[in-house]
Each structure stands twice: as C-alpha cells, then as structure tokens.
Length: 397
View 1 (cartoon, helix red, strand yellow):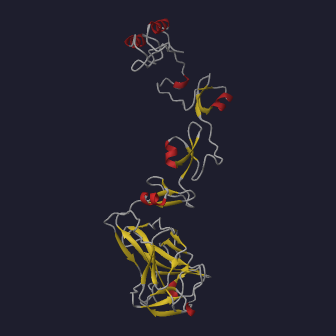
View 2: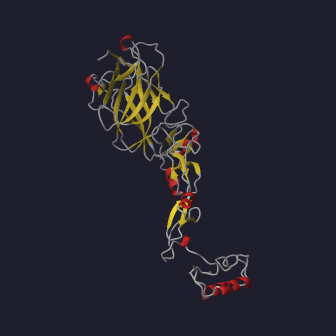
View 3: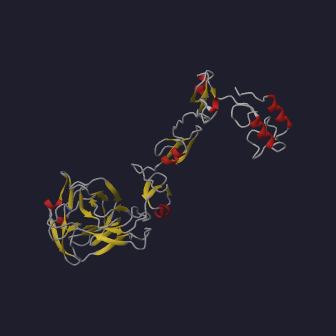
C-alpha cells in the first residue's frame, strides 16, 4: 500500500454552494449527513495515498430515509502546509447494490475543487451553482460516492489527499478503483473508513422531469429547470440515454411533420413518433396520409391516394375509414347517397318528408342543417320539397 501519514486535525468546512440554497423542497424536510467514518474534528486521522490519475477512492453508504442526495463531502488534508487547491477529475454517485464494483452511475460532478484542511462540500452540478444536486434515494438504498483523481497524490512528500479515521475498516463500505487491478475492497489496504460523506434531505421530495436545454437534458424539478433556463417537458418525463431530451419529430395523420412532441403526445394525436432528438428538418420522411379507397366491385381498403389510384379505386378523402356504422354490410363511405334521403335510412319516404316539412321556410342552420336543404341553396323551401317528391319511394343506389 502507498505511504500514509497520521495527523491530528481540526477541519473547517469549505462549501462549494450550499446544497439547499436553490432546492425547492417542503419545509418539513430534514438534512442528514450519512457517513461510515467516526472522524471527529480535532481528532487524529490518516492521510491516504498515493493515487494516480484515473483511480477512485470511495465509500458505500446507506440512505436512512426516502429523500434525495443534495450534497457530498470529501475531507482533504495536506501533510505539510502550503499546498494549493487542486482540481480533480470528478465525484461520482453510483448505485450501490453490488460490491466492490459499483452499479450504474446516478450522477457525476465534474472538476471538483479540493481545498486542503477542509471537509469540502459540493451541492451543485455546475460551476455557476444554478443546478442543485438532487439524486432521489429510498430508505435502505445503498449508493457509492467516489472521488476520481485527475492528479497524482504525493503523500510521502506532504502532499494532500483523502483521509481515513483510525477506528478500523468496516467490510463492504470502502472501495478502490486501482490502476491496474480495477475495483477492489479498500479494506485490504486500509485500517479505517474513508471520510467521504453524503447529505440526504429526508422527507417529501419534489418530483423531477426532463428539462431540455439547447444541447442537453437534465432531470430537474420544475423550479430548478426554470432557474437554470431550461424547458420542462412535463410530469413523468425523463431524459433519454446520453442526456437527450425525450422529444422529437412527429409524423401526423395528415402527412405533415411537427417538432417538439413527446412520444405519448405524438401517439395521442394519432401520429408516428420519430425518436428522441429527431427534427423534421433532419431527414424525417413522413408517410403519405391515408383514407378509405372504395372499389367498384365492392370492398374498401385504407390506402394513400396514390396507391388507391394505382388499384383503380375511388379515394374517399383524407382520414376517412371503411367502417360500417349502419350495419348493412357496406362501408358507409362507399355507399351511394341521395340528397332526398334526409334521414339517411337509404330510402326517400314519408319520414324524410316529415323532417323537411318541420323545417319548411327555415334557413339551413341548426337544427335544420342535417339534410333538409336538399338542393343546398341555403334554405328549406318549395324547391327542396319538389326534389324530394320526385324521388319519393325510391331507394338510394
């Protein structure tokens, strides 16, 4: 194991953005610091080293409640005074269902600045401190917090690094990603627990949804999305893999293409969703609109107009279908109609005459706009009556 140095230290707290400053949370929520270590400010600790770029030192923690991780803390100590702040590669939060190798990554905080002599706390995902850390967790859920090094540590010459307590290393709670070697139980090398912690806000947590930016997507609460200048995509939405917004182009039933649809909204409009991140201007080829195609020998198919023409059919128009609502065995749209069949029962008879006479002398407007104006001249008059009488007793064919 690389060299370690023992030091008795009284840490302060270096806050890189208070975790709750912009977090929209219920007043009843409580923050709890979750840790494995038993280090107490003013007590002894051991500086752990040496690490090379790309290695990780981390802890496996357990959530005491349903809530959210709103900050992480890393103790950073130098053996001899005078060292500057360092910028390391990243702080990772991983699923903790397996050990010693973590599961999937839940969040990453890039380029953390570590100040020697402090328990450094990080509560935001961006340098401008506009996007708060907010990783939902449940009671009993295990997760990792690891520091990925960008710089080699030189503990032997007094350089800064992470620390451990002096109370024994608890099995299954400390992990190391070594180069070479990969993930391994850090207790093989340690005699104490690393001082890396998480702050969990217990209590009701405002749900997150996909928040779209110009070139990226983050799962944020509505308030956080607004503060960060993004566009919230609605309850239940989540960013697609690769931080891609869950919106895309939608091919609508009329054959047109429209951008900015979620998949459920596109389907609800009867459209065909074109994948997350797609744009109508980027090669989307929407299918031609379809309608009922009627054939002289009988029968009906739903086709686009071009295919209907090729098949020697008669296209009934956009979005028409082949339904038989009157149950006579023929698609309604393909049935011949006659204007004197006012009530649409297939024959011109006394019932049609009664319907017409009830509206006689009236304009063709509700309730007299359902066929009583036989000749479509805008009013129900003697001309309509004459047309009906000429066809009286005839069936529509």
